[in-house]
Image (tube, rainbow, N blue to C red; front, side, top):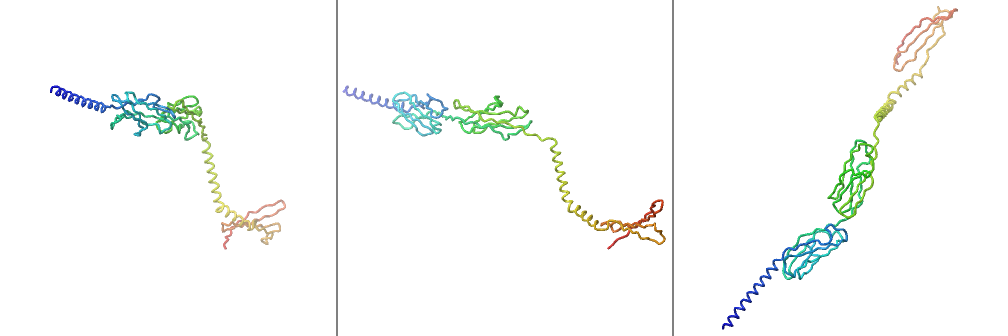
Length: 328
């Protein structure tokens, strides 16, 4: 009887111990921690076809543990570990699609759920293209402000630009976080400012510095003080030519016609050698002169000149004038 009682107590104790062990094991499996994702080979800034190695480990935890690697919530690889060693994942960044954010997940093989690690973000480095140096204008004059812009179309951001005149740096470096040109303002103060300009660009890609084309400003010709005077004289001559062209049909042609009409009328007076009066002697001559009629007048001048010839010489008498009214 005592032996049976002792056996029953032993069986009960064994049962309790089994239950305790199962609870402890279950608790340990449920206590899996968030794994840590660590970069053990390579860099987060990667170039094309570069290899990187990631380590994922959950501590504490009871093996076996299943580790899975994810890129943007999509599983890319998985490993099982029956001991406390980390899972190592090797990646080859062969294109821009391979860059981005990565995480790992740790879970027991026969359990659901699991916990995620921290994230690592890979950036693909692309070499920059040759930058282009340009300006809205290539002609400038003293005392003028001009701008220069430097832009590299390709290459991973950020891109750093630096401007030069000859071999001398003329501005602080400009780091552009966006795909846009770096711009500087220049003041053309003397002829020495019309030299050769360049810019250079670089980014995080190793050994990748590129120089731009050369750019030169040319001196714009300034207007001389005589130019406004020449322009004014040209305008005056133009106005005179227009006035002459307008005067021809209104003034010159009518005047020409008037002169032509005048030339058709008698141009000299009428001269008579006939004795005007019986009382005159043979040596006496009376001249009569008629002044041609002007088109714009209604009168005609009529003059009589009396001359006497003497032996000692000629003596002209006084001239008698008269004006005759002419009407149609």
